[in-house]
Image 1: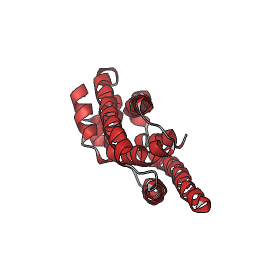
Image 2: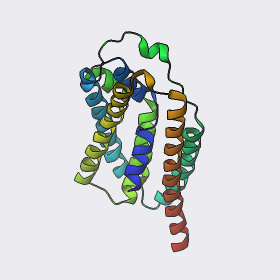
Image 3: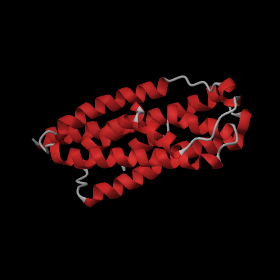
Length: 202
C-alpha cells in the first residue's frame, strides 16, 4: 500500500512532465499526445525494472531498517518541499502554438527527469525489499507502477482539455501540492515505523 501511495504522491504532483501534459490539453493536443504518455510510462518501466532487480541483488536485509530511516528523512523532506511549493501556470506558454508530443519525447524526458528517479529509488531500494517483493513479482509491480506513470500526464492533459483557460494554476495546484505533501508525509511515517519495529525487535 505504501509503495503505491508514495508513487502516486510523487508521480501525480506538479512537475515538468505533468505540465507538458497539461499544456497539451490546454492547446488541443490531448488525443494526439497519447504517444507521449506511453513514452513516459515506458521510461518508468525501464527505471523500475533496472533499479528493482539491481536493488534486489545489492540490498542487504540487515541494512534495510537503516535505509528505511534515511528514506523516511528524505521522504519527509520531499513532503515539505511539495507541501510548501508555489506553482503558477505560465498562461503565455499555454496559449502558444505547440507541436504534438511524441513517444520519444515522453521516453527521453522521463528518463532524464530527476523527479522520476526520485520516485523510483526509494521504492526499489527500500519498499520492494521490505515487502519481500522479488523475482517475477518485481516485474509485475513495475508494470503497475509504469501504468500509473502513464496516467499522470494523461490526467493533467485531460484536466487541461476539460478546463481550458479557466484553470487557476495558483489556487488549484497549491491545494494539490498540499494534498500530495500530506500523502508523502504518511509514506515517511511508514518508513520510520519500519525502523522503529526493527529497534524494538533487537
